[in-house]
Length: 149
Image (cartoon, rainbow, N blue to C red):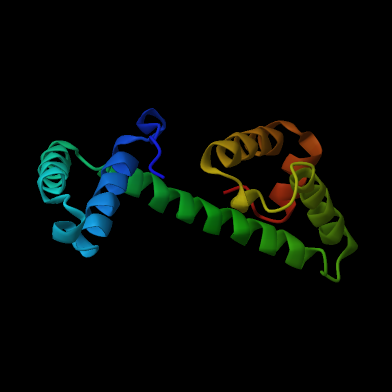
């Protein structure tokens, strides 16, 4: 039984893919025996016409630049957290206390900040940067551990 396909639910790329698959399936199923040569040629012509008009989305240079900067930011933040974590094992109790202060400040924003999506991660790191710049205890701890840069 042949049923109508609600084509309005497809976006352009899906629509073209669907009709390309329909054409390929029909073409592989001996269209002469099925007596569908004429409509199959029409489908092929239509799909080719639409395919030439449709511009597939491509990554712009800006997206690539943003992604590269995001990867770099993730590395920097991971480096900071690893340094702070390392200082929690220091022999000097003052340095351990400073590292714990910074770690508590970071931890209040959750685990795996670098795994958040770009927008959420940016908002989280912006809030964390404000804490680093305004919380006197955290500022002092950052200065003590030489992490102000």
